[in-house]
Length: 66
Image (cartoon, rainbow, N blue to C red):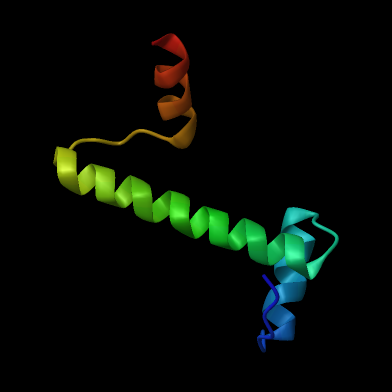
């Protein structure tokens, strides 16, 4: 989907430097993926309760073990 957005150039440049990604599109896509991943984990923690501290890698390993 095409969109036109005004992004802070310094923030975008730093994100590209930190991630090593070459295009602005890649940086924005990665940021959105990370936002969704974190919110899903937050939702899962809320549903399960306190003391639940799994990483994405832990969840993937649990899925692979099933």
